[in-house]
Length: 393
Image 1 (cartoon, helix red, strand yellow):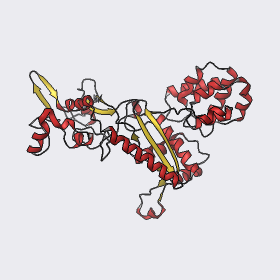
Image 2 (tube, rainbow, N blue to C red):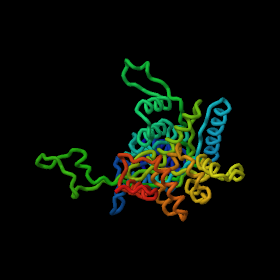
Image 3 (cartoon, rainbow, N blue to C red):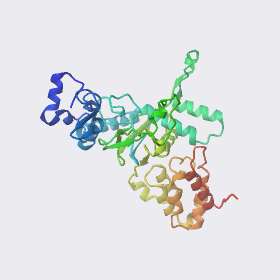
C-alpha cells in the first residue's frame, strides 16, 4: 500500500495491521490517507494471475470497516444543534425542524474534486456525510418553481424574493441584492450513516470524450465500446437526518418548510436523483395526548399537518357521518404531504366510495400536472380523476 505522505508517516500508518484504517475521521481517510495506488502510482496491481483495482479495494475496506466517528461526539453535535434551535426560539425566531429518513441511497458530492475520481461531501471537521444548508435552500427553491401554483408571476417573484433573497451577478445591480428571510441549517445525520459501495458503468466513454477512429471520424455511441466501471460510496437507505429552518416570519417559514419537504420527498437531494437516488421519507411522529383528547375531523387533519399522523391514516379514519364536515375543509397548504405519489395508497383503501370521491376532488385542487411528469405520474393523475368522477373523454 502506498500513501501520499512522508516516508516516516507512511510507515507508521501502514504498521499494526494498517493503522490508517483505525481512524475515526472518514474525511482524513478519503482526502489525506488515500491508499488507492501501487508503489509506482498505478491504480491496478497484479497479484498472481489477477489484476486488482486498488481504488475499488480501498473503498470496499471503507464500506466493510464502517469508520464511524465516536457516537458520543455525534450525540454531542446533535444536541448542540438542538440547543441552537432552542436558543433561536427563545430569541423570538420561528423554527421549523423535523427528521427525515433516506428512502433510497443518497449520493453527496459525487462530482467534487477528489484524488480517487469520485468525491463525497463530508463535514469539514468531523468527516461524516452531511447536506450543506446552501444546497438544501436551492432544493426548496427548485421545488417551489416546479410545483407551486402561484397566482401570477408578480406574486411568485415577490415570495421567492422574500424567502430566498436574491443575487444579481451584474456589478451595476449589486445594490438590489438582499438576504432572504428564511435560513436553512445543514442536514445532519443523527448517527453516523451507513455507507455502501455503488457502481456506475459508462458504456460510451470514447464517444463522450470526443475520441476519433483511425480514419479521423468521431466514434459513435456504439455497443461495441468497452464499459468503464466507476465505484463510489453512497449513504445507504434508512439513514436518519435532522433538518431545520428558521425565520422571523412564521408564514414564510411554514411556506419554505412545505417546499423543503417537497424537495426532499419528490425531487431528491444530492446526485443522480433522476435514477432514484436521494429521496427522503418523513419520520412519523408519535401521537400526542392533545390529539387523543380532540378526535374531531379538523383536529385529525391538523395532526397530519404537524406530522403526528400520515394522510393515509387520516383518510382511513373518516366516518361516513363526517362527510359534510369533509366537504367544508380544505387541503390547501398541504402540498408537501399530499402528492401524486400517494394516489395508489388512496385507491387501495377500503373506504366508502362517497368519502373516496370527496377526498380525490380535494386532492385534485392542490395536485397539478407539471411538464416534468413522467408517464407513471400521468397515469396516477388519471386514476385520481377517475376516483373524483372527473373522467375526461
